[in-house]
Length: 48
Image (tube, rainbow, N blue to C red; front, side, top):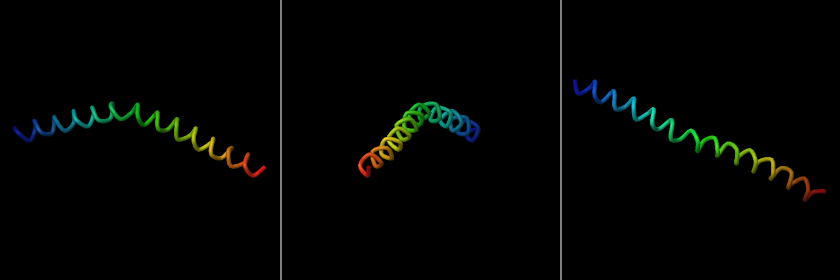
C-alpha cells in the first residue's frame, strides 16, 4: 500500500516538475537562440 502511495506521489511530482520547468525551458530556448544569432551577427560586423 505504501508503494502505491509513493508511486502516485512520484507521478504527481514528475508532472508538476514538467509543468513548472516548461516555461523556463521555452524562455531559455528563445534567449539562447536570440543570443546565438546576435553573437554571430556581431562577429560578422566586427570582422567587416
